[in-house]
Image 1 (tube, rainbow, N blue to C red):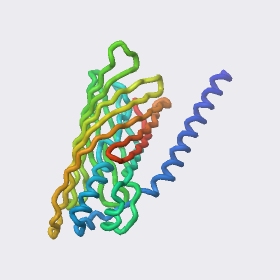
Image 2 (cartoon, rainbow, N blue to C red):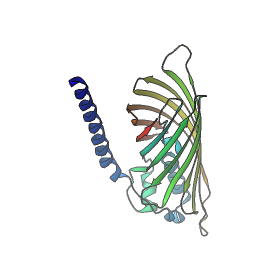
Image 3 (cartoon, helix red, strand yellow):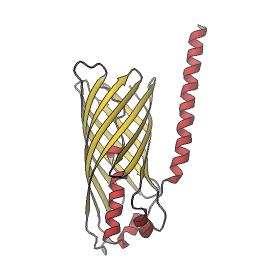
Length: 253
């Protein structure tokens, strides 16, 4: 009895420590993510528009939200998902928006349902802080175990996302990724490789800007930790000189 009580106390303390750590991380990172008035793009040069398109395509798309729970026969909800991405063309953002820019981010929720057949479907809804814009996305995935290797699985996924808000700014992205995952009881580690193509366009009446298409690849590593029905997922990725970090907290059954 005493051992059971001690075990429950340790588990409670562990969960509390993780929550405090997550709040600390978000408290440090979230204030660094800038907000933008995208209407200012009407005055951008084509070169600056291209530079901003590359940064925005990297930051504002569905594939930033990784697999919520890499198992089949479940449903999961990421109640709090935060993503931050580096900026490579801060000079262009400064000229167009009049402010220094180091990080782009989005915060929202993501959900996924996986079936025993190996198929999975997902959706996400995120807001770009203080901009009046957000990102909606959907995905379709397939997971299969590696023959003869207990706990190992391969997962493929295709996703589509679109920026929502005022009709003057459009960003649509299609992406695919392939992941190798290893399940270790209440923990899962994974690595993935992906590719995406994005189209960034504006439709201001007085703007002569041409739409820009951005193709990019990326590599990522991640770790999911389960505490009962609660999970914490962290991921770091890099590609085309960009660095991205994603943190999600949620629950699943």
